[in-house]
Length: 183
Ligand SMILES: [Fe+2]
Ligand SMILES: [Fe+2]
Image (cartoon, rainbow, N blue to C red; front, side, top):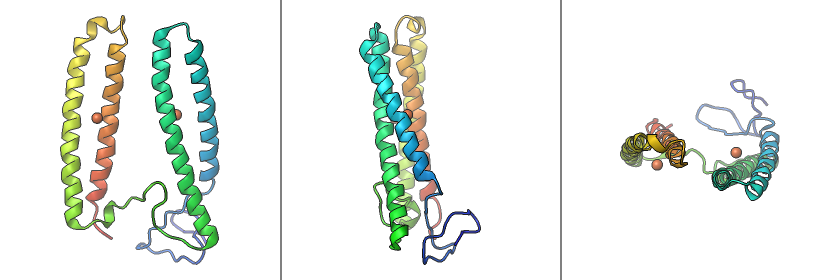
């Protein structure tokens, strides 16, 4: 059976209704994730090789930063693959459950009003702190103007500014979903 809204497959024996949130993975997602994992593994190997034979200490240092990110990407992709696989297995076996896979489901909408408010308060405070942090980094960046082409410092501060934006995006996601009404 196909869900008329999304075109995704309906797990065996499940009835579609707006109250049932069936997070069945889109077709081919597993294959796409696996091929991405492979591509990233190749990239990681290239980075490791480049870091080892680099004639420049600066390049080795920067490549090591990239390797840290790629290792994290690899872990997250592996978790995505496991979660998608678990859902497909449940579907095949007819034991669909919305319980946790390695990546928890988006459960913000299930919280009590009090817990939702607590999440909203917490994420608002943290967003404010991240924004202050962002302003500090901007100030630091201005101080580093004179050495921005002769050191790596300005680049590193720039990367932290980008991280701060990422942290704010994560917190906004949690805040937005905690603000959704319970279904
Ligand atoms: Fe990556
Ligand atoms: Fe941060």
